[in-house]
Image 1 (cartoon, protein in one colour):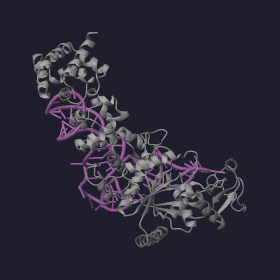
Image 2: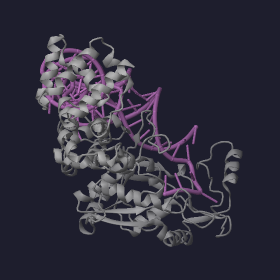
Image 3: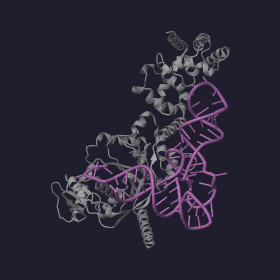
Image 4: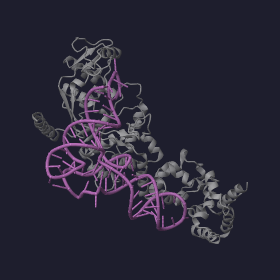
Length: 497
RNA sequence: GCCCCCAUCGUCUAGUGGCCUAGGACACCACCCUUUCAAGGUGGCGGCACGGGUUCGAAUCCCGUUGGGGGUGCCA
């Protein structure tokens, strides 16, 4: 009872102080701090989006910091990938809210200096135990020691820097309360936190301190990151305190998971933003979808303008539980965004898939005018832009590749050959317009008591090579009489053989 | 093992004590439309993990159980 009351009083007074400080002194400074270890992760994209939106809302700043400190996994090629992917999502390096990129590796000296300052103040100490030594001690002590893993063996041994010595933070007694904008107050008993490493035995700083020192030097006021960092928060908050700085406002957002409910991982799951982009997911669709994971705009519609999201998003209303990254739903969002485009926009968006090396046809065979004619018919039929070429390729190839299953299905009926032959005869002299072509086929249908839906199947396979696709007669008109009849003959010949 | 977080349809969510016989979206099913396939329209299936409290009243508050997840590196 008393404890609770005290906590409330303390926290409310602290909150007032923070608000007063924030109002007077500083514009909010958010940051996104990825490490360049591979393609850009969709989880990272969501975290970046959160920070970006928050910066936009508050007239604040979005700082991009590349955490490239050592480690064999880092590679400069990924840095450009991150920057490009962010720009694709509208997090544009030239925007006034954007600052950076900064490179953590450039600040190594500052990290070391901060660590040495902590040593000088007795807030950190050197230790000469190896990882093996620590494991051995833990095993020998049998029962789990108070502190996990490392037991504080060198706390009072008065060691200085030297070969094989790591610098460890002296975790003080007591409790550390992390005030989290998503989760409220999370309390950690310091006795459960080991004296963690600040400087490796080779003298290089580790993430825990490098990250904090950069945040301090870059004036970061708000740390919004994935929940996997929650256990780091008390440690980092202790470093902020030890360094004499006021810790930032924390927010730990739930992780994205796969169908097994495990955190999305680069090894196991399809997570690369670049890959989705290449498949033809639209940036707006991805942004919108990502923002519906763990949060939702007001109203009964999830697909909303980005501005509405910027207007409404709040950390306090972010869900506390992990969200499944559902590719099927994202594609459905994408399809809706595709349909919402004007035809011209759609044509422009398809450009990359229709020309250049990705196109399945020879450049000379492609006719932009023909595609423009059929574009409205394919626009309602694709989920991914990469699906477009296979829907229209029959228009730009000499002869379509006949899908065997479609062929067998369409020509299994005994009427298939004869009616197709009749259609061929009808096509020889009719007016070459979609409506007239349709009329020819319909008439033959009447004569044979076959519905158009059935009767057109063999014709469709002959012309397009497949049993499904856009409406048939418009493309046939575009193809022209000679090419159409040639294709019918080819498929008829195939039947005979 | 230990620390921490979490728990509404299969999935993503709305819901902040009465408006909830729980709303929307994706997926799925049926029907309508129809030139195949889509799109569109209509309808359907389907959920507050469990057990105790608190309260006139609980999906909403508290406790416990169970079940998930994250962390436990001289990675970030």
